[in-house]
Length: 426
Image (cartoon, rainbow, N blue to C red):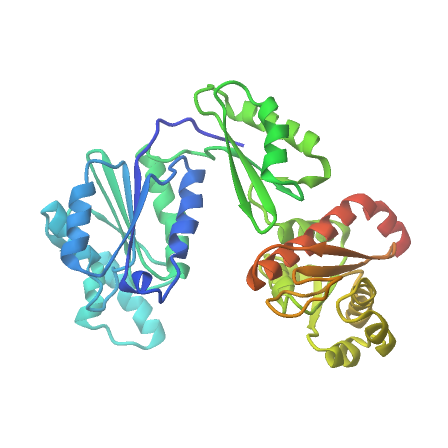
């Protein structure tokens, strides 16, 4: 693994769009760019959101120019009347917009494929501020812009997330590395954990660090990430990786991986190595667990299928859960979770199965099993288990945490019993 040691960089992210300030759309760009930039040694110094007003965009860019090493804008570079970022940037820099013939050729080819006629408004996307570079858009019509002058590099990205992300990774990162603004590798080593809180994790990790190393944490729906950077220690990539290995050893079963792989990816990789399959039965998570699996490329080799059985009738009619289990123990119970997992494995002919049933809230729950109580069932060639957990948060948080908890249960079981599972499965 290659890391880098860079001088501190000043980074501004400027998100443009009335819809962000009017609450019509969540600012997911800031979250995603924050992680991607930090991984390249460019943690965001400041972020701003401005409306689609040319004078406001121009004034913000003019005031920021020369004070930041990198400015990233999102949105406002399309063909409609409210897309004013290109012209505003040119005004801020005192340069003219310049037509890029290659961008026009690419635009006309794309429109020809979809049977659309190119208008004057569409062609406005093919202009860049003089001295700038047009960035190809593999998923849309609006090219991005890369402009580097003096200390500051400016990156202008489209608003649609499916266009922004591949453009950033394929077009922007290589250019930032070329001008020496971004790391050639990772700026830190990340250790991903599940089942241990940030405070106890820090108590284990802090003593392993050399003087000057920097330790930061990120927590999300049960996952806790420890990021270890060189800081002023002078540590090399090998030094940081050596610390990560020590962290893995002291964390034990709570260690998930080094890097950024999600729990679903880890489980899919386990199953692919075993050449085994998994099926699901979901109630309170409503298909989110299946979505987590199918988000992983290559999951089709291990994911057999899923049944979302929200009502008791669905549990009985689709999965064949005996009425006696539901009557005696209830739909939210260890017995029901185990039965759901067993039935899913049988229905889909899979080697393994996971099930989730619980009270996500805000209503429901009992004195014994209040809102936030979730039962997870797990079926394998070795046997069937169920686990009761109580998860904090609102309805959405409980559902997301339930998905990660189910995936982590399977990860741990595969780590512990994979040899036995193989023997029993023969």
